Amino acid sequence: MSDVYVVGVDMIKFMKAGTGPAVQKLGAQAALMALDDAGLKIQQMEALYCGNLYQANAMVGQRILQEIGQTGIPVVNTSNACATGATAFREAWMAVKAGVYDLVLAVGVEQMSAGLLGGGGGAKGIPKEGLLGSATMPAVFAEAGMEHARKYGTTFEQFAKVSVKNHHHSTMNPKAMYQIETPLEQVMNAEMIAYPNTKLMCSVNVDGSAAAVLASEKKAKELGLMKRAVRVKASVLTSDPWQERDLVMPDVNTCTRNAAKKAYEMAGVGAKDLNLVELHDCFATAEILHYENLGLCGDGEAGKLIDEGAVALGGRIPVNVSGGLLSKGHPLGATGIANIYEVSTHLRGEAGKRQVPNARLGLTHVIGLGSACAIHVLERVA
Amino acid sequence: MADKKPLPAVDFLKIPESGEPYLEGHQCKSCGAVFLGERTVCSKCGTRDQMAAKRLSTRGALYVYSIVHRSFPGVEVPYISAVVDLEGGGTVKGNLIGIDPDPEKIRLGMPVDVVFKDALGRKDREGNAYLSYFFQPRKA
Image (cartoon, rainbow over all chains, first blue to last red; front, top):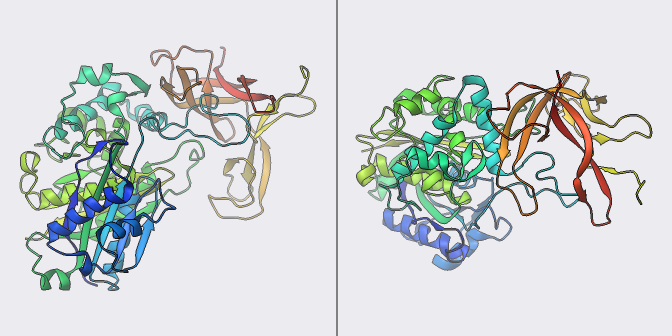
């Protein structure tokens, strides 16, 4: 089977939730940017894979084609919680890998609204939020972080340091929603949302889109696109296996560990070979868990990893140099492709001030709560 | 209306004609996994039609928690969202009451009891009152 390459990839600058244009126009922007990045036209695309969550029943992919070129190609619309964009990318990868198509487009797009996610509850009886604990995302991920604290003594300060780091990184990313430094005291003293997550430790709801053009090796060579191409070394999707507490406490760990193991096997590499990682920091507490889940350090060493600065730009294994979901922003359906844009940009040596020097190998990770985990391992070609 | 029996806040809270309310789990006779709510297939081992109702313990231990300061309109904050492992199997999520919402005071692993009280005055559209469950620190 042919290797599959990213030959064009881009994202729009993420913007405040609810300020973007209609979803199809938002998605069309990134789609056109990715086509331009590859120097290709929509007429050359053989299929479109579109990730969008909040309008999953509304044919967003087809509506994007109505904006940029209705060529009649097959469109697949995907929805997989916060793994939606990565799932669209993976479907595109699989189609090329299988030899069905040589050149396809993947788009992730989301229009968001401000405020708390989760905890809506059912229509039956009485509202359960605040009666049977909390189903809001900040609380759910706070509890996931407390599980780590319970096992290893991880502190509020260590969780907060994740936000300090990611906000710092985003000051070097012009496409991030925010470019502001947030010192430790500011993060820890920000409004408490769900202990231990303060407001600055929660991802930012934004409108955004990202897109990628994927090609078979034959097509990439034929089009003369290998110089800036990025090889997809692994693409893995998992769901959450049964756990004794998962009825009340969604497990984001096991599906990540399972996906990481498969991804490293598929790519023929280990965590130690990675030059950078974009992982799912939907909350500061979550990032700590995934250092261990992805094998960036041993179990129980995540607190030390953040304390020592190993995961900051310039450290042993920089994590979320884009600013992450915490500061770049988290447009749910676009996030999985925006991460691929970030890693690809470093592998191409085009990341400007935040460039990870000599980056050859990177990993992207997203979690859709409920749960789905998608991991991609990307490698520089030239 | 005053003496009308309250309804259970969730399906797995049982209110018998006589005796104390309790939480009901369903246990797989094949692998022992415990679920909240009725089901016919075990999602741990896949065995069908081997589920048996099980009265869950009112004794448990605090597994993890979060102190919720921001919620939806009408929800009183702060409160403690807690995940509790019950003795003999079953994990339940609910509010931890009877202790300050202060991380200095709440101890992971602390013993708690399941108690049954009115559902914070919440009523449905027909005006029915509900009975819910809460966790409170076990008195020594």
